[in-house]
Image (cartoon, one colour):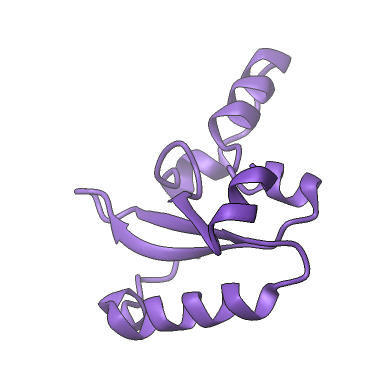
Length: 107
């Protein structure tokens, strides 16, 4: 991963393996250790390896599922080069409509 960032300014990919869960599912009580483990691995983020490597990463809204649940794009940059990462994220947000979308709030 860090080797790729020596060659490229940024890496792009999904921020997570799947879309966010519906709020009711995310807030449901955990019934067992197995359920806790499943939820943990189902909701993992692809930002973790970059965090562990000390490389900056940012997740940006990039769409929604058919049911309206958000999905995100992740950009990752070189160590100590947050400026390039933030410029790219800002440019992406300016070029796409997702920054203006406001989903209904859940209580």
